[in-house]
Amino acid sequence: MAQASKNSRVGSNTHKFACPCGGEVKMRTLFRNGKAQNVAVCEKCNRQERRPKDFK
Image (tube, rainbow, N blue to C red; front, side, top):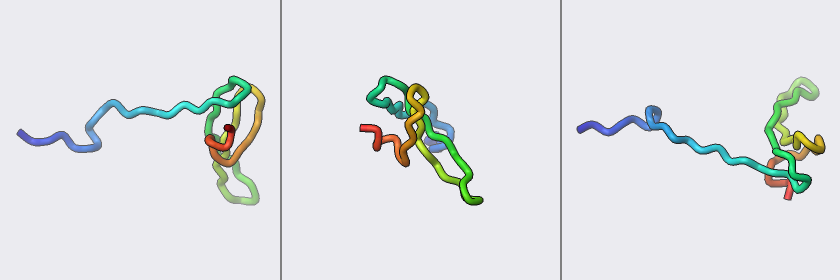
């Protein structure tokens, strides 16, 4: 029997990040100086960091 392709598999997980204030951290794309920049933003306190793990 043939194997299922890697793209047809289901059950992908997403990692949820939390800020010390208790809010949820989400990634956003901002355009600054004509370039796209990804930043992590806490929805509760509006703190911005470069990566989600910088909130620790």
